[in-house]
Image (spheres, helix red, strand yellow):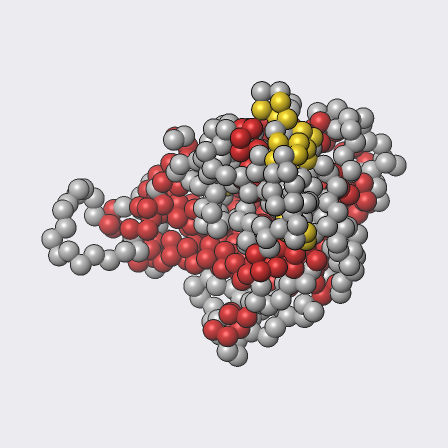
Length: 510
């Protein structure tokens, strides 16, 4: 177990503070009284660990049936063809890709539960602090105040995920009555919550935690999409927030693109805010299982069967120049072991060479003849012989995104990227991929969108990017017809509406 991943294991301690015990004479392990407990940053880390743990786990941020599905299955980056009966899942993956979801669709339900589950865990942390230290914050020490700011920033982040997906949602801050707010009202609350707490956060880089740079990144993301959320563009504000991260000096691009996605990428200098994963203690990174063909289990010696599921579309795969080193994040070609191409059989195919092709000819094939179709995602380091989960941390935010956001905001605000085009770190996005430097004329908005896709594929940004660029509902990729722009957001789940009569008005998502 990696030592700086201990906070996931410490989530158990946080849970203990919410658990009662019927044993009237418990065994005593410590003389520390609860009123003396929240006095140091380390003590707060044990409490907030459970709120961070919401991001990991098999149903966390990159859950294939929840938040990540809503951001990626719905885009040109991911398709999940039904191969025979595999991956049909009551038609949900097809509904997500073709934008025919409904208010009771599984992934729509799970996305809401994930976001507000994180909010609830943050509120539990704040309630525990209040119950132990009392209502007078003027008596709190620096560690307590910093811990509260960290928790409120994380809570604001979870609210942002909900607002981005569902539009008009409620604000759960332990104070307001349960009611539905407009998207603009939620945006304004999140923004103020971040601004009120950002100077109380740790200014030093603290891997896996809400620090000042992470808060600046969240604000940058909000301002980049402010016109979508509120109708008012905030490009200058987005640039300022990106500059705050750049000027911190805490982050830089790796020389090699794939270094960011190594199995031992903990503390990586390009990662601003990760989900901390561990194959044993913090499970949930299963990209290798869900995307790889069945025969790839044998090729890599995995002890768990691979699932032959999500892949990318040929139109997206073709966005990469053959000289682009990042194209290697997609597996295409023969599946081999010891230099020999493996064979595969199913009810339709018999002992055929296992060769992955980029073309996806159908989204549903009852014969499973499409078993090899679609480039497979292998950006994270493959660990031969592992079981169900991988060790690589997942970057929710990383430095390349900051640089790309600044370039886009400058282009939208001023019509040109200007002197930032000569920034060595910005151009390094290209040079480390083995490509030529951008010129001002080449760096159109459409090219920025394409470059964001190539650089940030499957990292949970694509739907949001496509919405901002006005492309999400245009039917610009395979198996996707043009839809109403109302489908830029998802419906409030039916179960939420039913459990809270009179509270919510269904948003216009048809």
